[in-house]
Amino acid sequence: MLQSACTAPSPAIDLTIAANGCTPVSLSLPPAHEPALTIRNTASEAMVVSIPAMDRWIELAPGASGVLELPRYIMGTFDLFCLSAADHSTLGGDNPLLCVLEPAELVPVARSAGVLVIEPHDRIREVIEQGR
Image 1 (spheres, rainbow, N blue to C red):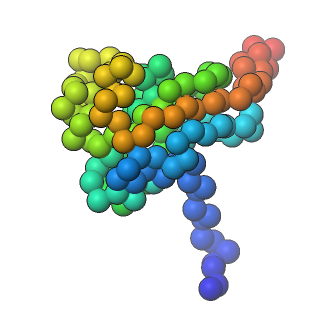
Image 2 (cartoon, rainbow, N blue to C red):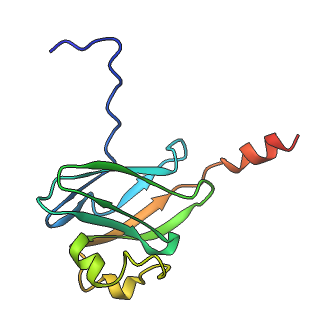
């Protein structure tokens, strides 16, 4: 298969969400990884990836890919849940007046639950360099 030199490379997929949840269930972002997760939905229904402690979630249509932006300077270990968009909506997770669903609300309906580890990095150095 030939590729044109002008063709942009496809972004690497960090997380794949299927009908039974996410693969891998748990993942680790190394220091050089940008603070974002590239996610592909291979399920036949809309699915959601949620990181409650960060107040972040993304809904993806069947067959769609997307990027879940993470806070730039955050590090540590966070619960990560994969569930259907229908279940997320039933819980009220798509309500703009509701800040975030709690892990205890997500556990009973999640197709999978795991952890996201953002390894220590020095992105804060960007802020320090700008101040000079």
